[in-house]
Structures are given as C-alpha cells and as structure tokens.
Length: 353
Image (tube, rainbow, N blue to C red; front, side):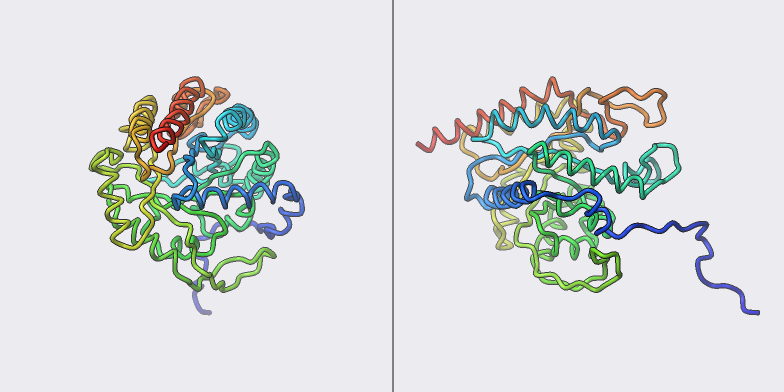
C-alpha cells in the first residue's frame, strides 16, 4: 500500500457557501447599488483630480463588534452630510487583519474572538454589516487580503486597498486588476514606494487568474485592468513619508511612470509613529498644506473608533467601541480633524478664486 501524499497537514475542512447564497440572504437593493456606483465614480474623479473634494476614509483599524460599527457609522454619516461639499467620506470597514506572525485575524476568520474560527458565521456577519452601513448611506472602504473572500462582499465596496504586506504579491495585483472599484496600493512596510507604483502599473493591465465565481465554482478569470488605481503613503520602518518633500517625491515617481499625480496619505501606521493620538497632528499638517493649495493630496485616511486606544481581544469583558487591534483615535478627537480637513478644501477653493 502506497503512503498517502495529500492533505497530510490538514486536520479538518468545512464547506463554505457560494457567494451568491450570501448575496441572496443579505441582498443589495437598487437604492444601495445606485449609491455605490455613484460613490465609485466620485472617488475615481477625486483621485484623477477632476473633482476637487477630498476623499476621507475614516473608521476602526478592524471591525470586531458589528453593533459598535453601526453606532460609529451613524456618527460618521452625520459628519459626511455636514461636509459633503468638501469631503467624500467613506467608512473604513476592515474584516481581515494581516499578522506579522500570529494573532487575531479579523471578524471573518474568527468572529467569536476565541479561536473557534467560524468563518461561515464571519462571512455572514461581514456581509450583513456592509448591507447595514450601505443602508445608512455611507460608502464602504476595505482591504482585500484573502484573494477569494472578496467575492462575498465586493459588490458593497466603494474603495478597496491592497496592504503594505501584499503590495508585492502578484495575485493581489491580478485581483485588483479585476475589482469593480477604485483601489489604493500602500507603500511597502519598509517605506519603499517604487513597489507600490509597480503594483499600480501592473493592476492597470489585463490579467488571467484563478478564483471563485459568484456561484462558488473554481474558474479562471480574465480582467480588463483597473485604471482607478493609486498610491497610499503610510510610512515605513524608515520613518514617516507624509512630509511635503515625501509627497513631492512620490508624485514625481507617479508622473514619471505616466500615472496621475494624486495620492492618499494614511495618517496612521508609521506616519504617526504608531501613536494613534498623533494622527490628529498629521491630519492638521496635511490640512495646512491643502489650504495652501496642495492638489497632490487627494485623499486622507484616519483610524478612528468610538473610544481611543486599544485593548487585548482576549479581555473579558471587552470595552464597547475600543479597537482590539491597532490603537485608534477617539471619535471625540476625530471630529475636529474632519472639520479641519473640510475647511482646508474650502480654503484651497477660495485661493483659486
């Protein structure tokens, strides 16, 4: 008898529902579909420079409590309505967390935060939450980490991200080339921007890659290429990269590669020295430059939650509205930053006459 050679390190398997099954369970209605399509067009116009508003992506580092996320969405919606003339605000709704070694991998992977890994439950919670936030008239922003899970909720996303750890990944570039929304590529974790520019160029080309259909069948997919791809500066191990000189250098790199000279700055991660409170300082500096006429900064990201700081995901009980991954800026301190950025856009317009 021959020794077995397959699945030697697979302990168990669980079937997943087809994406179409979850779409039927938590459908996107016509009104929501219209809003998402409009948000995608507007984001595309902002990142190309045709729309002089600022794209502002705000929300928790990761979602672990859907109820708290809905509460945050209501607050953010009010701010979005108040500043709609200057800002297009999308909520950061991240369900997957890349880990340097191990740790909690996000709501989809482990929705009960206890190592039970009920991924089917996580997918249902994720899609339902996105439907609820769409119903609250907020565009959704998320990172695509697992290259198959996006099929379960990509129809609900207005802006997507490829993270610093996956920006060099060929399969993520191929995925982005077929996504239906604008996609931002973060610079690598060491701060290298050229890698992200290469990723943007790659995603703008057509590719073939294996994935799942909406019915859950494995298939090879051909993409058209995604022209709505852009750079996200998030700093790196070399230090922050949101300064005027860093932005100008990045814009020169983009222009030299035939790409639009507009980008997003992430106020968190290495740009804040991993100090959530410093995000407000970074946002204030960006606002000052925008008010002075800077058009290269077309978008800003802030990691914010109901309460500031972070907590261990294993804490009992968990504090409602506080991050279980990276520390976030509290909503109380986020609101002035939003107003400051809106005022900067207005000042930039007045400068132009």
